[in-house]
Length: 588
Image (cartoon, rainbow, N blue to C red):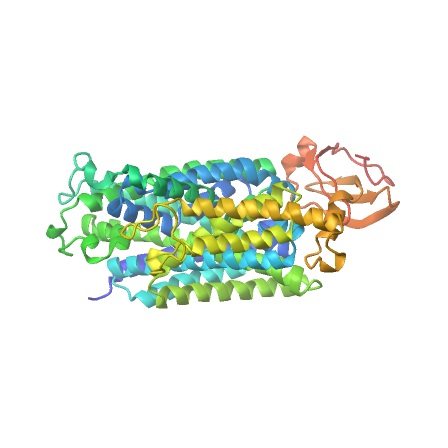
């Protein structure tokens, strides 16, 4: 079948618009001039609330969210389509519980609290788990995009995947977080326009039955024996939404902890609303008379349930509308892919390369390492999407590992200061063994551990994901408490402390002295100087607070912290009145 030239042209225009926006965003923010690692990872913490909400929503409403919801509605029913509800609740919990502390500590990546609390070994382990999640997630949505393009435009699968990935990797390498954030705005507009335009045509097509009268076909059912599975999936979907670098990269890029909470909650609400078109399209695909279409058979009957959304658009909307709908899918995939590759590259560059491998690396070297890792991660995800036929199963397994392992580790590192690397290491192993031992039907992994109520036909009925997470969390706490006592009581000699928890405990109980800070207000920035009175020496840290906005200056309030040897927390009040000559500023 010949390539749809009109569709191809429209798709090229979509991609050019996104590419141009990404390049212009980088240039306008000065990132092509003299970039820094902070600007590339968290955009100098200067993302506005509005742009933050857009980029959070676009990242959430990705290709997997749109295609996966429609597929789940058509194959399992609404009652088993738990991702939208889980993501909605998860983002709200993330905003209320995790976003504020992460932003107030001025972390650069999600792995920073791991590095502070547990050290390099645990950081590398958690990074590998997160990298697997990002790789398999990106590969799965690229594969879905390739299928969509082949259905609607008749474009070769490999060409479609490589082109889409290439455009995304290119603008991400150029502008990093700034380009990703502003392209997300454009991509979200495309998503909303394309999907909302398609739905009326789908629902009014003569070959689509009334979804009101055929609710039994797409609502699904939940029986009592399956209730533990349903609860397990909902908990995993909810709390598994939180421990992803793509989420925290947006939380850490805004100007304050309050804004981080706002964009999390607003993004949750927006994503929950924007799932409605996918639900309706999935219901239409289940209720339609496919015998009257050019396809001649339901995609569900030929093992193409994952492509139900593009097939519905292709068969039940006018050609122009189906192409615009395809543009929405493409935009959704790109908004997810850029977040994943940027997140993985940021964690590697800052937490692995800089903090473990090359402590004295220059900013220029780090930026080139980040660009190289963006390219490598993008290439790996693209290769997997083309050559690995069981991507969805790999993603499910990786997502479960993130929920089972990364969530309890993050919670302990952030809130339970007594936990240590020994507990984290054994908690990691415990969670991995319990989850992998449960098997994975998509990958044809036979279960090694048969949990209670195991059924040879259904598989695992016991909520093994939640159980594995709770056990991992418990092991971290118990082992940390035991090893703390053993080392403090000198039952184990200091020479056995391979993770150096004694030094970390000493630092925790003897924090650095509080800084006195002085400021010199200067138009839209402020010079902050730190001095440690207990040492009677300056911190040798003069910092331009570039993330102070004009609103911050006019209000006279800003959260100030010094992270060069001294610590200062809390909101500092100061007056932006002119400073007399010879006076460094007003003592806070």
